[in-house]
Image (cartoon, rainbow, N blue to C red; front, side, top):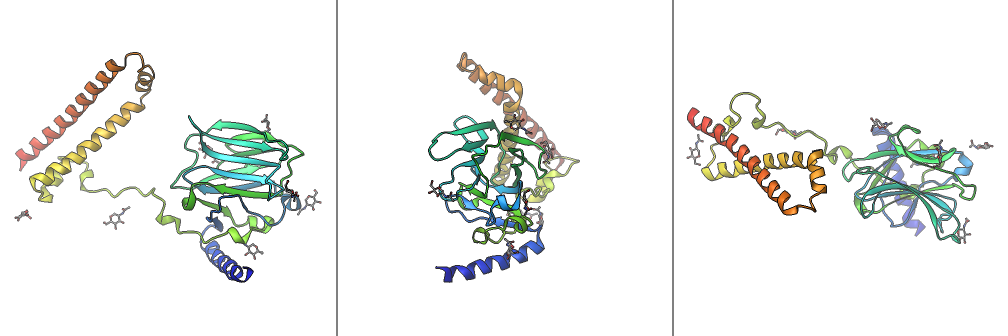
Length: 297
Ligand SMILES: *[C@@H]1O[C@H](CO)[C@@H](O)[C@H](O)[C@H]1NC(C)=O
Ligand SMILES: *[C@@H]1O[C@H](CO)[C@@H](O)[C@H](O)[C@H]1NC(C)=O
Ligand SMILES: *[C@@H]1O[C@H](CO)[C@@H](O)[C@H](O)[C@H]1NC(C)=O
Ligand SMILES: *[C@@H]1O[C@H](CO)[C@@H](O)[C@H](O)[C@H]1NC(C)=O
Ligand SMILES: *[C@@H]1O[C@H](CO)[C@@H](O)[C@H](O)[C@H]1NC(C)=O
Ligand SMILES: *[C@@H]1O[C@H](CO)[C@@H](O)[C@H](O)[C@H]1NC(C)=O
Ligand SMILES: *[C@@H]1O[C@H](CO)[C@@H](O)[C@H](O)[C@H]1NC(C)=O
């Protein structure tokens, strides 16, 4: 087993050295085992480390455990970020004592969209005077939750766990390797994130031309009537979608939704009429533009 394992570890650290020179000296951890993966080899009580910053990208929630027992994981502090419960998304600090006490102490706060499937989110954890975690990479800023420390819970090892599978990724500044000695077995080569981040603004096509007839570009496109119809149909449903999203997110619309139970058929009727009016208005605008276009050409 060791025989096969060693070249793998060596390969990993080689790749790591290369990638840490090129990028922002980050260590990526992306292997999933189902249980906690222990990050450090040197116990925290020997390094006096009191904080950690990391970035994580996951479609479900992320867990960090701080414990001195890597088999029973008790006693421990467990930080859970972005957990989907029945009605909301929460983050919490859970304090668990010895295995004899099956109950843990929970301290939760609602944190909608704290994590993302497609982009890294950065957090910090500190265990200096309290056990605290927050958002961003500045320790002490944007505190999400803070709880008191207990003498019974000794922090020696940091474990991480994500639950949504291969998509999950964690990165740590590789400088922490100097103090905590990162467990090489869980490190993997970082992917080139620039190809997966979706935040590139879309290319402006000719339909964005700001002046003149909005539909003039259709002249250059030699479309059949059928193609023209399909093209306009898409634009129209885009328009309709953007209008109805705005409608839903206004505060008045929200409060209307809340009392929908009392007069449901009436409000549904009003909703249908409203949508019809909006579609009619949008169609009318498109119609006018098209008439202009036809007259022009
Ligand atoms: C950690 O703190 C203890 C007590 O303050 C000190 O004796 C020890 O040298 C420190 N260790 C490191 C690695 O800084
Ligand atoms: C971890 O917990 C298990 C089960 O309670 C116990 O047998 C073991 O001795 C503990 N290990 C350490 C290092 O405390
Ligand atoms: C803290 O949150 C505010 C508001 O969300 C944000 O503008 C700021 O950049 C955050 N600070 C850090 C250090 O992430
Ligand atoms: C430590 O945690 C306690 C309990 O949640 C809280 O009342 C207190 O404000 C925290 N202290 C700091 C410095 O964050
Ligand atoms: C951590 O440091 C050790 C010794 O300095 C080095 O051999 C190892 O490659 C480093 N690992 C990572 C993940 O940077
Ligand atoms: C914009 O279009 C050009 C040419 O088709 C392409 O090379 C470029 O990658 C596109 N940019 C984006 C952000 O899609
Ligand atoms: C437009 O398409 C039709 C049929 O595909 C073709 O006969 C005609 O020459 C095209 N006109 C131009 C200006 O490309």
